[in-house]
Length: 212
Image 1 (cartoon, one colour):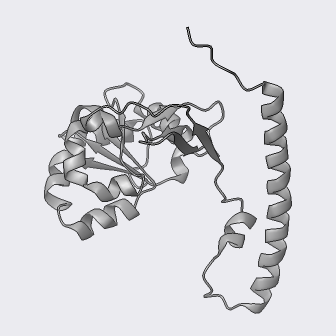
Image 2: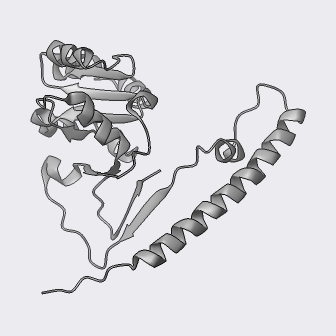
């Protein structure tokens, strides 16, 4: 059997503490720069990297490097994102714009979410028939992609998506992650998915995903 090498937890904690210390220092410096810039700039100035860092909006990415090239499955399975559960959610369902693509009739899923007190304002439910008819032009797909932070799909219609959404969703790392919408507590499922890390298949030896 191949023996796997595990990173010592003490080394990991040292690295995380060092990163946390660096981010605190960088955010303090960025906040000071932003304050000085705001005194001089007009109100219509575009935000820059310092603004994002000062507000704590800088994402924390985890990079995994493999010794061997991964074997990629063919078809929809080869591009299917995978959920990596995190012990502490890095974002809440109410803080992101979610699109949920489902098998028709979509009204059943909408009623289910409403019964579980999920706002349909930040969780947009799109039936597969509506996706086929309304989001055919490139510009319509572009607006759909730009209007949402994360996409989920009813796992029963996953094989249909690559053809319907096109390659731009893949390039933008916004291919929907499959979920089982027949679960009784759909709200809890979406919260776990939004708060977890989403690992997307790669054809190289490195993969990265956001963890905070």
